[in-house]
Length: 70
Image 1 (cartoon, rainbow, N blue to C red):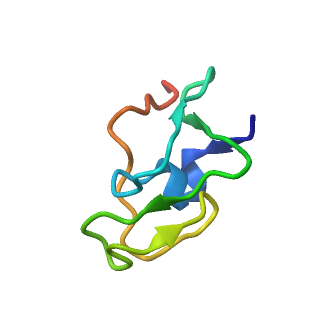
Image 2 (cartoon, rainbow, N blue to C red):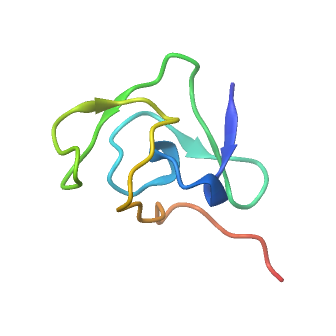
């Protein structure tokens, strides 16, 4: 299962992404399936299917993520 850090600000860690995912084992990481895709909800790509690795200028961190302390 791929893992991506939230600090890359990609769709998989954005609150607007509607694909299947879960918080990673380490703080600030997201786990997702290799073939994951999901709709953008209320963002600039609203209604279109987006890859976990896509990005845009209106990224908002997914509330389920816990950031590393420090």
